[in-house]
Length: 145
Image 1 (cartoon, rainbow, N blue to C red):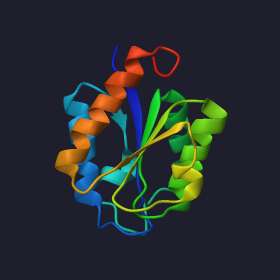
Image 2 (image 1 turned 60 degrees about the vertical axis):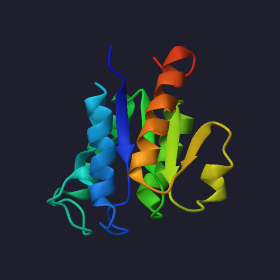
Image 3 (image 1 turned 30 degrees about the horizontal axis):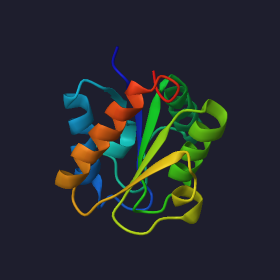
Image 4 (image 1 turned 135 degrees about the vertical axis):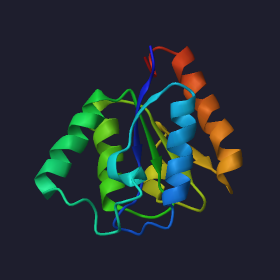
């Protein structure tokens, strides 16, 4: 059974990491995972976000979080939305979270013992570490289905 992964990253904080987000999503999908990424990995979405009403985005993203077995969040660019999604995943859904960052991130994320933090310099070194983390989680059913 494939793992359903909610992929999270900054939108309104800037779209400079779009290619990076796309590379992570592509790598996860290539491994056979179902990835719910929505606007974060969509090339047609700018920093102003989607053209959907805010309430629809909120409800859709919560539904996707509810469907997910795992959250992977790229947290290099600070984002209120990403923080909200991580907190929802951790405290409401109680699903594992992997946070990816290219620099120091918030102590609230880095200090959470239930969030696996992967610090990296480039996507080529991060992807194998991310995939290994997911494989490791799948070996322990208490962590991930």
